[in-house]
Length: 115
Length: 114
Image 1: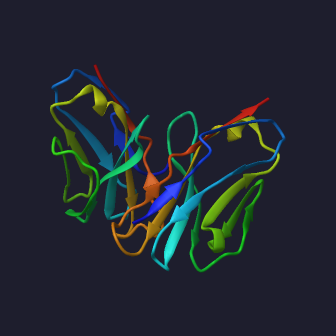
Image 2: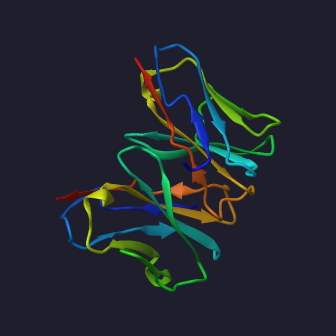
């Protein structure tokens, strides 16, 4: 079975602070994919990143970076120098090649960036 | 604009009623997925269609049904509505049947049952 845990329900930071959102996953598959989605107050779900289980290289995209560690089954997301526009709910998701063929989402972390 | 179109954006209806939510996938995508996002349940997978055929079923209630039409748009039918069905319903699409490339989500339909 697949499972994604986002233990942080809500986080508040002051603008320009760095913040890390945690994601821990469970799967018995050796091939799987991990995702992060952003849900701003407007409600839509915006794709941020996809990683496959064979690529543990960290990725950086502007102020966003992702740390994938298979040893701890974690795929954490860091926002550097946070901005008010980063305020949103962030979801981590998992897709495996076997089993139910869909994305399993964590419960999300609500990030509030205070100006 | 993600390319996935959901209508209507908002819907208010009474308990016991039936509603239909509509989704047009991104051009070229063959798979359509429906998700329900409620406050206490998070994002729950309901059902998937691929090129007109049902491919996977999640936590979809018997009162709910869906279909995908030849032009690939999909409809989610919710009947005998209860207060607990109030939620944000998302449609997503992908090119293939699998989820390994992730999905493109629509902006959702917010259903309020009163």
